[in-house]
Image (cartoon, rainbow, N blue to C red; front, side, top):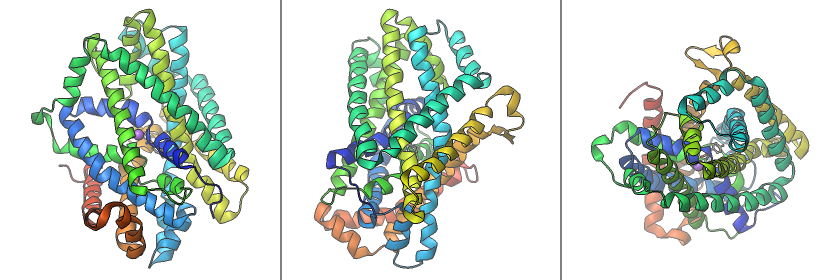
Length: 448
Ligand code: PFF
Ligand code: NA
């Protein structure tokens, strides 16, 4: 049973804290760059609305009706095959695995906060050397910051829902908003802002590929923390009279706004200095630092704000990745919170060390599986295969295996009969199908 509950605002902020993360500030801008700018943004907005909001509603309803840890909720809410559905709850292992390398990346961000203070790289080449050097040779620094993240996240989780998760989000989320607002205002006053705006909002449909649609769906799940039992777990501590539809819409809107604002800021700065947007991790960790340098003395300040913002976003997401498994151990095994937290934290900590070592030149041969190192494998398996599978389980569960009347009683008063019917149609048939296509496409089994 869940005893402590979020306040209404606390829940929204915690869910936003989970959703807003590296996925918004780092991944969204670079996939936008890779998949054609405005056209991709448009497709993303549509998927965020129809798939993102609809699945978010599903997860909130499951949590609100289930009121327990994810595994128990799948078991108790299933109208048939309870013993089998219980296993769907084990999707909560996915965020714990993601946390292993996510924590390492937050560690890099801490290192870049230090770099913003000590002095930014002056050229892209220098910037690249610093980043590649950190990744492939510098065990000490990465281990140090990974440990800092481990301690921080564990300490917050130990304080529980209200005094830990709610409190930290109530502090960090408003600060994140303020920092992004400052950076946005600065960017708006830079000439290339209009170019960045054009790039993001003027769709050129000739650039749109079916691949982009698939990527947009995947991004919608990852960015809203869906398909991992996270929102389900948070929602188990929803205040009784929460409106799950309004909350879902609000959470998606804020998450989307953060992604778009981050994109506008990043592209404005890049375009102003005529910089190329390097692919993947390079965008934030290689291109941007040297671009910030070119802005002169204000540049280091902007860089500092920028990396602090990502750190806040990352920490609040990291906490949400840990909570579902901690609650599982507390609930099902009657472990004390501290014991449950230590088991889960040590798991991600150790796996994270293996992941970071897999990027180190001299170790990589041991930790390579095929062409990828462990670090890349964890990311690939989790975000492209397991998260969509988790998403399928969630929508199939609520669409076909939960008490239809109970779900309707929750939704019809909030959005009417017609919309509730449409929502059922989407979660029963459309979204599972879309997710199967995502998995087939991303694993290369069937390319579109
Ligand atoms: N939604 C987060 C982001 O966009 O960065 C990522 C995330 C959060 C992934 C929580 C996994 C997770 F369990
Ligand atoms: Na996000």
